Amino acid sequence: MSESNAYSHPFRRETLAQRKPTRFDLVPSAADRAAIAAALGLIDLPAVRLRGEIRPEGKADFALVAKLEAEVVQACVVT
Image (cartoon, rainbow, N blue to C red):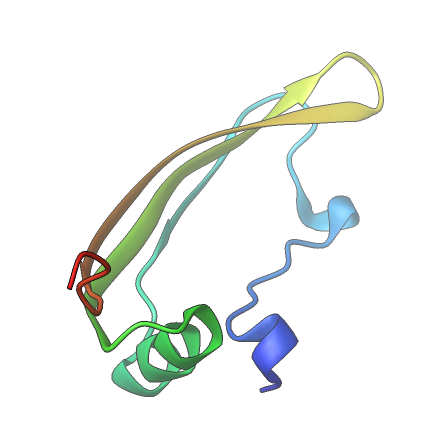
């Protein structure tokens, strides 16, 4: 896992349903969260979740509709 790609979960186009949404619920492991935190310059990333669906749009396009929830710990930028 490189810093530029701290966490990746690709969906292959040919595996996506053409008539109904493909639903997903992604919760990175502790090691993946640590890599994401490092890539973003965070102190910690105790929780992160991305859930939603990839919807077919027309004959060849898709739309991503998702909700990202995260709890982050970052250094204070005021002091």
